[in-house]
Image (cartoon, rainbow, N blue to C red; front, side, top):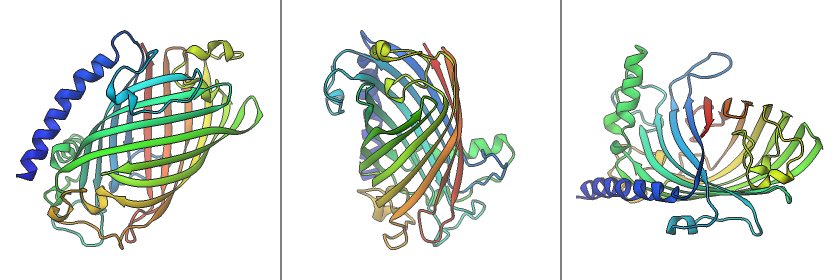
Length: 335
């Protein structure tokens, strides 16, 4: 009965939110479309794996508008004054698997199979004068078989003629994903026009995961202000007058180290409401309560198109786990 209710709620959520996302863009300017793809086969050394967080894909639509017009808009935070506000609607699918995917049985001590599919609504509010930015995001979705992670991973492995994952019957049981993310960033130092250091605080709370993070972003190269809201997609917004020597072409390297404290994670411990129905989960004593993540790569953009490639290194998320290495490719197109 619970599974049927969750299935109905998930379908109803899409039917309600997709028209809402279209309405949110009415009388707005659609700024860009962004496609982002993670895979642990992508890395600089060519040492691909297929374990733990193994793949993820996200499609985002960014747009601007003068005022908040919907209930969900009002749940997102903006800076005081006259900031540049950039809104977004996106759809994301994530998949997680144990270190050994050929075994159809439960592997004690390893990560359980898990898939997540969710809609997200985001507001990026930036102040180019005070050099600060706040990002808030609402995530609505599902964990479990309705995420279609099993079908996506199996199809991908058939296409490349690789070992098929055999243990998806043991995946995390179906549950609701409802999370709120907030991130605050501020310029810490700018030794030159081609080098800057940005501080970062973030928090995630909800049925998916509860975390707190502290980190930095280092950028070096040819770039526009990080606080113009348009540094990656090559176009200007309300901050145009504040941008000196606006660059249509950008090329820079970046590093983003961050430390995260972790209270819980549904992809490891099961859903908030149905964790006791999952065939296999990790206990709170088996997960690590903190981890380090180091993200580095490069970005290249012109006026219309942006492309980035980066690699994410993360220390183990549970005691019997391993350090993870996942590559990412992101394409941004201005409309």
